[in-house]
Image (cartoon, rainbow, N blue to C red; front, side, top):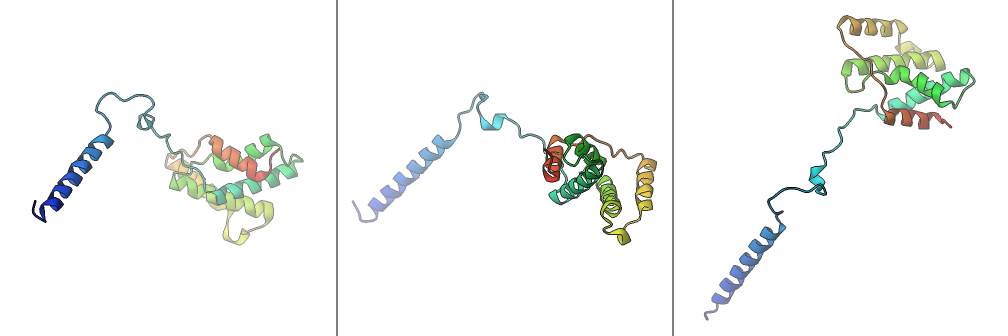
Length: 155
């Protein structure tokens, strides 16, 4: 055999081995079984408020429930937080309104940011949404409720 011939045989053997390995890695064509990971669709992603906004909601809810002498009552905390959580976070117009509502509440509860917010703005924004026929009402998700309760220190 010539000196370059053994290299050619080695390269051919490597090519055959690579081809055989790539064929073995492919799944067999046929019906898929329920145990296939790809058979289960991914759960739909539900838009959720960022943690900073959830913290603001929890803080306001906790302050309002404390004034009502029920500082860690889940029902009170959820009722107060639902005021804000009812706006869908995925809609920019509704999201803007909840931002204004949070700012108005922080001003009234903690006297924070009062120079940058006008309660009349919230009324005008809600009127504009209603005039445009936009529905910004929804039930809060379980994940949002749980996050607010945890952040507010519910028992």
